[in-house]
Length: 330
Ligand SMILES: C[C@](O)(CO)[C@H](O)COP(=O)(O)OP(=O)(O)OC[C@H]1O[C@@H](n2ccc(N)nc2=O)[C@H](O)[C@@H]1O
Ligand SMILES: Nc1ncnc2c1ncn2[C@@H]1O[C@H](COP(=O)(O)OP(=O)(O)OP(=O)(O)O)[C@@H](O)[C@H]1O
Image 1 (tube, rainbow, N blue to C red):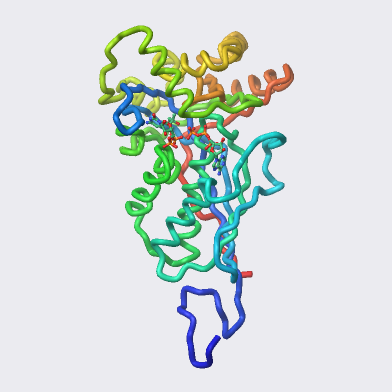
Image 2: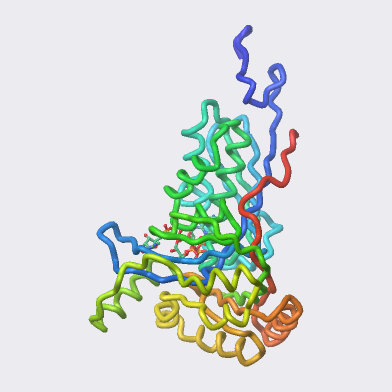
């Protein structure tokens, strides 16, 4: 450093010595308790009306400032998923990398950053795992680089990264319109319990939307624009009434996911036969979300499905959106 030049206070220098700082953020995966999909739009997206529920399965991103410029990404060995044979790009195609790049543009003096991602949400599983990494990274880099952006500004950047990213930032229960990014928080805080059944393969979200368009084209039926969600769903979530909820769950993408992976129908059938109130494909799949009567039933069902060779975990929702869990100067 040239004598007399002072590093801005946002940079972790004490004198000439660089002090790395790590900001660790966790962000939840989601299930779509309802997902209505409109016709294909000119921009390649579909309008949706969805009730999002953030569930207690979290991604974690540890963002560490580096003296060297640039963004690097790694996957933590603490990830609980079996990632053998799973392709996650670690370069500029990674959603967390993209989030850090956007934040660097918004920050006056960004340092380099290393992002270590702990993966727990299945990859290409329909639970918004990559979106949670992006939401966590936005928040972590905002803190690391003292960008001082408001939650609204962060939500705006999140929407540029993907349709599901704003919800992982917000968490809780929310109605999503537009492509899923126009969110209204719903005051539905009562707990519902779910069992998630992971697949050992992924489904590409665009492929699933395309399969739905194909099915609809062959049926020749006009598809209305989805403008709202069924109020019964929000009431059932508000009152913690899983019986009512089980009768109104809906996912327009489900039949498309099942066309691509017919075995999903059997997983739903097995879950329902073993005590789930209802089962559905989560988002674009292939994760199956089984609604349980309560936390004890969810635990028993997850154990039984695990015993039968499935990967099944009991979770609950709603849980908060992305939040900082530690901020350490190294
Ligand atoms: C299926 C859901 O997970 C339900 O919450 C989302 O709609 C998908 O959200 P996402 O994975 O964040 O989606 P993006 O990464 O923004 O988009 C990936 C691709 O999915 C398709 N896509 C996504 C969202 C949407 N409302 N309509 C679409 O047709 C488009 O082909 C898009 O190019
Ligand atoms: N941080 C990331 N984690 C996982 N996959 C990522 C990440 N960044 C980019 N990808 C790529 O994106 C694809 C979809 O990943 P992701 O796990 O987000 O799917 P998803 O959970 O089904 O998404 P959604 O539910 O939002 O449609 C993966 O197959 C992978 O190639």
